Image (spheres, rainbow, N blue to C red):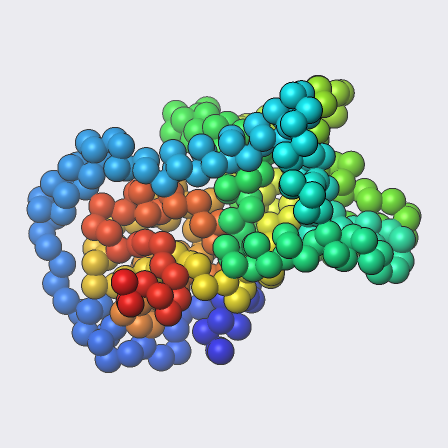
Length: 321
């Protein structure tokens, strides 16, 4: 319980702390001499040369994300009524689906519980409670995909020292979550929904572009020229909402200490590297450590790890298979 509490605090902006207790098995593993550098570099080179394996989960995620959003588009343009609406509120073959954060903002603006909204969020709630973490962000959100493509440009500019990356305190996202909620209550208007690039892009794909796309472009330029993935990391309350819902999820990314050589490739590609604090040598409190609820479940760390220390896992099920 204490371990989960610590991971929840990290999700809300606290800095990861060194574990107070480390199991004897983990202590022994931390003390073991790792394979020599030449041998390990050979393993890394082989993994990187096998491009299909190296990007397996990224390619699957992109395919799922594109398919989900195109289903909205085709349902509207072909009038096949499979997935109607947009990501903020939709209907899938008759079942109402309402984004949890959008529903919360609307109810705060109206200052009472709206029964129809509450019913519409039930299916979505159980789906993301099952999948866990911020999986909505990396597997469904269209802005996440576009920002991921622009992120590669930002990293190239940083590497060439044309721009520098500016980081902010991660607690800013919690403050923005509270601020947008307060604005809904005070103004009676869903301010965040007007600014959300997720909703703007979803509606633009389905119903056609609007001037709101200039706001999305401005955010992308900010992320390319100033701060890596700033909106997702420090502002957007959607990820925090889904992270809270997914705390109890049985699906997680699992870190296995015995397979790790602490080369750090996983943290370099991770959108939220603080969730991978345990991969730093001496930080893992046990031989197997689940990644916390702030993880986007994107799979980039799994693709990047040349020794297989990270993998998807279903709690209570994987060891039975």
